[in-house]
Image (cartoon, rainbow over all chains, first blue to last red; front, side, top):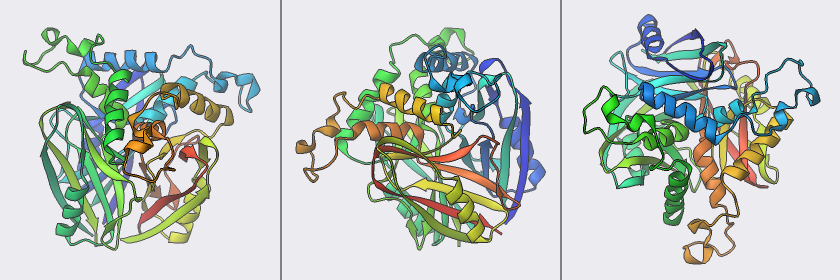
Length: 145
Length: 145
Length: 145
């Protein structure tokens, strides 16, 4: 079994922002030369998430509204008392971003058959930026033959 | 390493409905002839989810109540303005289903040892229908030797 | 491809408690002798979850506060009517723990490259105890060469 590791690197949008990873994933599969196996997609950050959804602009705006209401950034969080933590004093106040990442999850695994990612018609693997803008990395590993 | 791909197809229940995938998964493992490796289970839809839970009827009713309260279908969502989107005009108003799928996740990976899925006594891999009833497909891929 | 299966066993904390699995995972990788491949981490219980987050004590307290507010243990749940279920009468009233586990998810998959788990600087794979204290098991399977 071959294992080909790569990264998708991107500059994310402001606050909560969704980025479609499908072009990068299809490119990683093509570059790997692997036709049958599977692909793991794992975020490398604690304030981003990987999840599958429809890439429809109005829905992406609903996601932002929903997450902001579910986990208000303006609530009181202990993690945001930067002065009480052992960390640089310019650390961002982003407890709400960590909580959203916890709910959405950091990895997905997708089967690969005949060179194509086995996903439904409307499914896009997405990076959910939860504390942007930032420079981000997503690990993509392709396994198979 | 062998890779055996298959689908579980099912007609789901009304609204939010939970379907135990264990009989289908055990059958896929048996058919594959693979004893040691792992299994990926990936939903092929953006308004269903894959998650592991106890298959207990009263708990499944709690799941429906909880998700309906957390993400009310009657709230205002931009995705539900069908006329403003580039899509067929009979598209369902199901933004709440997409948001629930985002939270629950679309894939699980389960180890396979000596022909048995490595799960605890009360764990069932389930398909969560979030906008039923519909005809649905779940990809099951078995890897190993 | 080699497949090495093991378990991390631990006695968890009271109520909602987070346990960093990284020492156990790094040990499982070292013992496996595998340098390139991937690792699956799957909870063996329906009232625990596996998720990736920053191991920062004040954030972990925020997680407990957030989950308790999102899914109050004191709410009314059908699953908690122990007398109406076909189960031992000393079964715990833990519907809220099942719902939290459903949201957080039961598995993560992490790439392994040159003997190192491919994770970002602040990422720790954690067991989320949602109904502790209990004796718990986490399946760790290492695949590769």
